[in-house]
Length: 260
Image 1 (tube, rainbow, N blue to C red):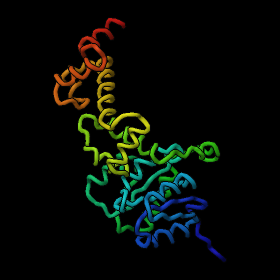
Image 2 (cartoon, one colour; image 1 turned 120 degrees about the vertical axis):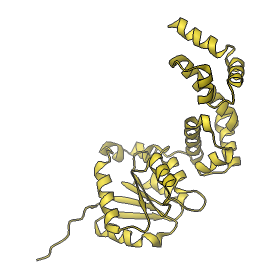
Image 3 (cartoon, helix red, strand yellow; image 1 turned 60 degrees about the horizontal axis):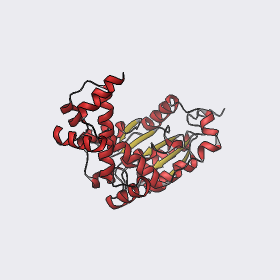
Image 4 (cartoon, rainbow, N blue to C red; image 1 turned 90 degrees about the vertical axis):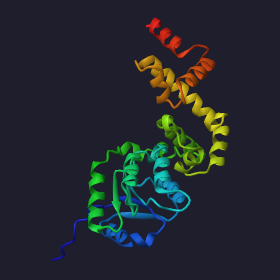
């Protein structure tokens, strides 16, 4: 009698993005044995293209890769409509706590260290595929799959999100660019082309926009708001706010209160 083993990953599509495919050969064999279909990209940017084209059920992603690291890849994938909900498992030798926290914070569902036990990785993949909530309508809708964005637009959206979350501790321009998989001159050109302003002109506008929101919706002091949105001092904040909106922060807050 032929006792065929149950295949836990039957007809599952898995994309592996790793610049050293040989390190995951045993895992690929195990995935095939479990019925999965695998696609391997040894170049990060190629992996992002394949993610948009093939719409995999799950992505296995290395961290340390040349040109653009796995964290930047994850950040960019989260800005692409048909890739936003694909579960991403980091499989890497980057073992320090900061890397693990970064991976999970950026949206990875798991973080597994190399060297790894193949059976454990397969089991974790199966668990995450059971947990993920991707609707069949979304995955089968041709229009949804065609929402591929220009790479520059993806980079822009990722940079805008990163900056917005770090206004009070803003990285340098080169670091922002690295975090979204590009370099400072390219990022500056993207901002000028799509937004008509420099990166730091947009940062100033975003700080003032966020300050407006906090003045209207919170009871934070002017000094605390100034620090929260990244101004060097309350005086600098007040000057910038008055120049932009022709009213002081205190005057703006009072207008909001009077209107309500």
